[in-house]
Length: 324
Image (cartoon, rainbow, N blue to C red; front, side, top):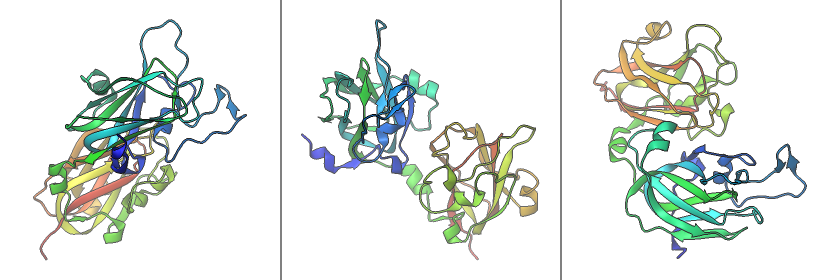
């Protein structure tokens, strides 16, 4: 029954997974569900709302109907083969039952869309044991991008793992190549930014996923007109196939919208370029965003605009160098 534990954790935080919504997290934050390892516990660690738990814990429901739930974006979309609902350290306050539903999106959904979508049940309401890893095999063969974990009716869950087989977006894989033209390691360079008060825009061109808010670009809060931006010289002139904008770790301080354009360096240091790679788009906090943006024009400089301000963890420009 637990053979699925050897499969990939599709909800691994390091792969871009995130807990994007919970209807209640009064005692302990929803983000703890994806912390690495088993939950830790220390007695006599009390805060303003009681015992501090390394997990997700909701308030006690009295006579109100309903259940508490959290929605997770998988870091790797795929076929779910099993889940681990870990109630570690929750003894007199774990939920007696839980269920899991799933959904598939071909875009990054808003919270409103997530709340309105018709979820598909992949694990019926099932009993849980306290302070235990509760393992459940899943029989679904569909590709999922999001899951909803529901407690019946309330309580605390320490960790949630979603094991399965990753199924990448084939269109995105085809577009991502053969090179990240903006990467520092490949010769990309930051040539200008409107504001780098908290951390440098060049951080967005580093390899790997962002480690924290300091490992990205964050500007100060804009109080006047205008918006913030940075300009990058690509490692070589080339044709752009796809763009990534990753707001991971930026939650209350992510941009509301972003735009990516290309042009000459003098032009981009003054304003958006004439070649649009990504139209002005709404972005979500703490989320990797991908855009397939085939551009037949050869470009060498690109500009990222954020509206009106906010942080970005990573910026990628996938494409191929032009023939020399």
